[in-house]
Image (cartoon, rainbow, N blue to C red; front, side):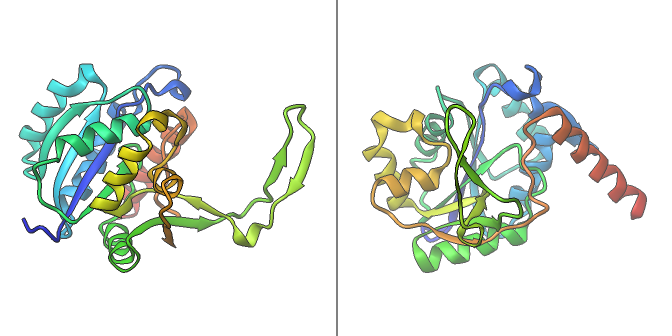
Length: 234
């Protein structure tokens, strides 16, 4: 491991409210689960040196055993999530405090179709720009809607991107942003927003349409179908 390397915080400490209370990370996917599929990619990535896994508090001991059983040598810490996604990321950053890397990637554990190519691509962009996140052009027309349901504005679609993870940052930049926004972390839904609120600029690199996030039961069913179709076509 070198000081110029990449550490990854994989965040899975949420409550899966849109899954009807079922924890999506431990749902079956292929020969394992959503979580094991995600972790396997980061373990296999040539650019990732260390991993902190952030999960619900009652899952910490289970995930520590899981990492041991799978031989995930890059998982150096498993810690409990916080009150919000950003608080969970802050916990993961603290867990990696003694791991000397120049860059940090933050990834949603519920994106099991991430690829090693995407991780490397976003890291390369972060090395050039200091901070990078993968994004996809918006295919749908996007409207700003008032509280009463009336459309107020149609946004220019060519300037919009749907942002994914992993998001990669110069470690000092991300840690400074988290310190600066410590009192407001619950307001942010991704790390790029934390950095932007602290005066930083985030470059948007090309994302990957395959890199879906599993949020609802329909998403999970589609992900399972994708894996099954892939096996049948092999």
